[in-house]
Each structure stands twice: as C-alpha cells, then as structure tokens.
Image (tube, rainbow, N blue to C red; front, side):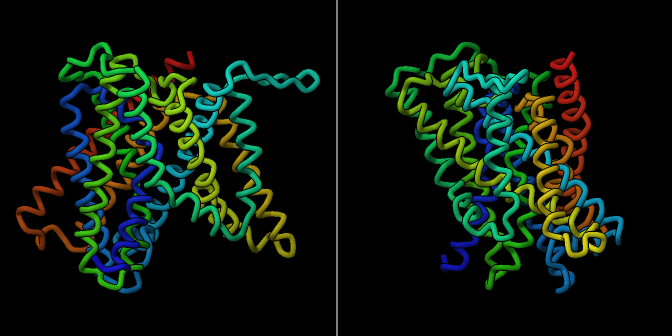
Length: 396
C-alpha cells in the first residue's frame, strides 16, 4: 500500500475509532448474539454509503465537503440539512464525552466531594464540571494541531482498551462466566443495539476530506474496506469479551464493570479518559466556527472576545445537558438512531439518487440502496422512539 494511502487509512481508522467501543458489550446484551450479524450489516451499509458519498464528489470538482454534496443534490436546503444533522450530532457527542469522563472518574475516585460556600458537588456531577474546566481553554485555541495529533492515537487507544479488558478477564480473575450469555436474540433490545452499532460508524463527515486528500483516489474503496473491516473486528472482539465477562450485568460502558483495583482496569480507564479530553475541542470547534461565521460582521474588533464567549457558552451548555441527562448509553443510542443514521445512511443514499437519478442505477445498486433506506428508516423510527422513552423513564 502506498505511503499516502496508508496515511489516509490511518486517518480513516481514527475517524471510526471512538467511545462507541465501550458501549458495544452493552449493545450485544440488549440485542443478543444474533445482533452481531446486525453489527456486520451496519458496517457493510455504512461502508457502501461512504462509497456513494465519494461518487457524488466525482460529479463536480467543486465539491469538497459533505455539506457541498448536500447543496449539489438539493440546493441550499440540502446544505442546511446536512449541516444541521452534523452539528447536532457533534454537540451531543461532546456532551457524551463529559458524561463518560464523569462516570469513569467517579469509578476511580469514589466519594469525591467539593464544597464552596453553600454549593456542594459530588460524584459524577463534580467530575463533569471539573473536566469541563479542563477542556474549556482548549476550545479557545485557534490552532488545534497538537490536540489533533494526540487524538489521532485513537486506533492505538482502542487496541489498548480491548487488550486491557482481555487481560482483566484472562489474567486478573474476572473470567468469562457472565450470566445470561446464552440468549440468542432479544427483539425488545434491538432498537437500542442498532442505534449503538450505527453510532460506532459515524465517520462520514470526514470521508470527503479523506477522499480529497488522496492522490490515488481509485484506492479509496479499498482503503475504506480495510478501515471498516479492522474497526468491525475490534468492535466485535470488545462486544464478545465484555458480554462473556459480565453477561446481562454489563453496564453502558464496560470499563465501569472492571475491578478498579487491578492494573489492567486502570490502564483501560485512563486510556478511555484520554481521548475525550483531547477530542472535545476538535468536536466543538466546527459548531463554534459556524456560530462565529454568522455573527462575525457584528463582532467587529471584538471578534476574539466573541469567539471565546461563544466557545465558553457552548462548553457550559454541554455541561448543563450532561448534568440533566447523565445516561451515556441511552444518549449515544439516540445519537446513533436519530442523527448518525441520517448522516451515515439516509442522506448519502438520497444525495446519490438525486444527483445521478434512479434510472442510471444498476439493479444491484438499486437493491443495495433500497435495503439501506429501509434499514435506516426502521432504525430511525424505532431506535429514536425507544431511546427517548428510556431517557424519559430515567428522568421520571
């Protein structure tokens, strides 16, 4: 594989390697063993829609980004639709980062409490606020090169987490005797499982950038196959490991099940904590940039102060949402079902059909795209409904 293609492949792996890794054992416990086939089906569907996006880019040399594809297909409305789904997805992912950090830090330091006057914060809420104080200054930076470099260790971190969990099971005495691991299929849990599986493959906004960066664009489908195959193997391994270890007792993040006194557990948890801290600013910056672009004319000489204010308010708002909805798995299932399914499955198919027209498609293409649209629509309706019901149930 040429060096440039290998570099793009690594960037693609980083785009697909994220905190979804921690939720796949829980997803498997929700859907049963048969749902692993759905993980593979989701991976195949998202790979194919990634190819469709790049075919859409070939229709016009002026297309450089995902919103450009939306505009080429559906005009200004298409650009706004793609941008809206992408920005809301990024916002909720940033919120999920804070919830994840709070959950795992509370496991490492149980009973922590800080009191300032009449205000007292403890446990997960305390750590959500502390992490927000740490990441807020990183969002003010104009150049995120260092953070991008650190967050690019996502592939390495994912492998370390899986190996640490395996070590905890095989060496540190956890074992593979989780209860309830003989259930082949749980129909009621499939919407949640599918939402979480789709959340794992939410890298489509990055694909146009990866495609334009390649000198040999004909290698892109092959590169994308490698990325999806390796990530799916990693996700599948973690799902099976976590489910065999803890069965129906597996939590929304498998790291929360690990025995905190063991070195393998500490390695897994600290590795888990690193990526969200470094990626938070990278995730929030596109949203902040869009807001700043809208108010740039009114800012005048105070543009820098406005930028800091906008980004600080964004951080504060994600803190408020994280404290109000501290349900990591349910929130990520909602992101997967409502937003990722649109960005990764429905919109690529719709844009492709609009740009090239249904008559130009082969019968195989028509069947594949039709199947993806049906699957995506089912997940969007059922997954969004079940995720919202679970969140409402937790709040009541």
